[in-house]
Amino acid sequence: MPIKSHHYVDAKNIESDLAAFMQAIIQIPSLSSKEGAVIERIRAEMLRVGFDEVTIDPMGNLIGRIGSGPFVIALDGHADTVDTGDLSLWDRNPHSGDMEDGVIYGRGASDQKGGIASAVYAGALLKKTGIPDEITLYVTATVQEEDCDGLCWQYIVNEVGLRPDLVVITEPTSLRIYRGQRGRMEMEVHTTGLSCHGSAPERGINAVYKMAGIIADIERLNEQLEPRAPLGKGTVTISEIRSTSPSLCAVADGCTIHLDRRLTVGETEATAVAEIRELASVKASEAKVTVLDYAVPSHTGLTYPTRKYYPTWDIAQDDPAMLTAKTAYRTVFGEDPETGVWTFSTNGVAIAGMHGIPSIGFGPGHEHFAHAPNEQVEVEHLVRCSAFYTALVETLARQQGE
Image (cartoon, rainbow, N blue to C red):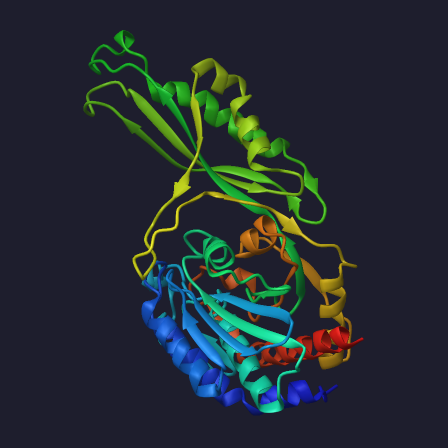
């Protein structure tokens, strides 16, 4: 059946402008720490459609505001993308922003410039209809998420002082309402050996051999981790291994592995580190286990150091934020929404995981297109997200007045 809500009809009427804006921002490459040009383009669009205030904070996050009511909602999307990878795997230029049969293609189409485009045009719609007096709406285009998820919101909350009452994370959800994600952290395990000439390895202690038992134990640990509702199973995988020695004709005197640890409900930095340190092979080899730090300048040159620990977060199906989102969805689409959780990580690790700010997810596109060749998003998804965001604002306003 056709969707008849005014939220959807209004969004459908701006489809061509919304799609053109989406194409424009895909055409601007924006790797982490190199988002300056796309931030300026999004800033220009916010000003063009009438945002009340548009600022760029010292880290380089773009913050647009509409309204000045007591209840503060933010629609967040990150402006950075991963690189394009092997170009031979793409059917078209990754930065073309080509549109064909209602689908826009290019790096960032799903992850996640589409969410930003829909949020900006939700703001445009609310400027036309009049934002409710009860609401302040912020639309944020944030930076460095692909390198360090949530760092931008650590800065926004701690340094800018913006702490919304509700945040909608606009990462791709296939038009479902999402309510959490696994956390993650990055660790290294290091073994130390004793170098000697490779012609007589018995004179030394090979750090790579010491690491071999640890690698096997970590593989077994991953298999033993159990799923926990609603986020599923935590995981641990070795994503890099490297060694040091005086030369390629010498026994390795050092070996390091990099661990990508995904954290489910109840798993924390402390429990994950303890699991590795308690492995028999780690104890036997006296290996060192370290949680890594992140300290990379943003596109403005500001460095905001943090640990590479990104907490798990989830909310219940009957949490007020979820109930409000479900009501808004029914208002727009006339049916109950599907719900779910992300497989990957988002800025929610800081917004909800570190700061405890009520958060939900709703965004255009599909998670499986993220970081993949031929990344894409349906224009209809962009329209429906803009409609949902406007309905959510109006639903929240009604609740404040009750």
